[in-house]
Image 1 (cartoon, rainbow, N blue to C red):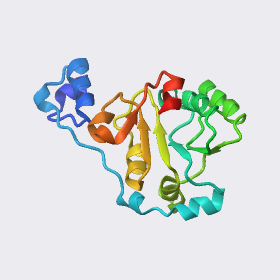
Image 2 (image 1 turned 60 degrees about the vertical axis):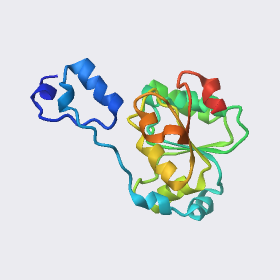
Image 3 (image 1 turned 90 degrees about the horizontal axis):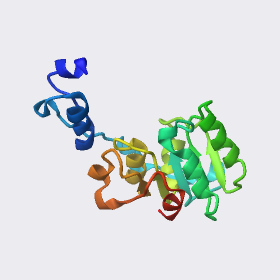
Length: 189
């Protein structure tokens, strides 16, 4: 709080996040300067054939992010995917947490779900994953605004995302918003 009060400007990524600084930390509204997140243009040019050739799938449901932190909500996503008869891929670092262990245990039971923990963000394969997917799902408890979802959207994927944390400022009517605490709502989205 002291650091924020000493700053001439506090630079959140969304208006919602700025409100948290104002309401929660007492930052003067005049010191809030929203700086939107951006993504690399290369995600618009990814080639889906590379991912399809390496992993044998396309038009899948995709999630990118850490597997294990509760905020990322991957466990509920995996639960939602259990009864969806469609291929799915989760790309992300697997953290050694109880939540991460539960995610892996549940994922192993779903033959349509592939978990990849070693795809470098700056690789052509990573951009290809976005290009090859049909739907990108980021049902986190909150995102400001969800850089992976921005990358996927730029690649042409349909986006399903949490409404919490300023995502509506970026995605407006171009995304499906789901309740991150409802497995059924995530499944429906």
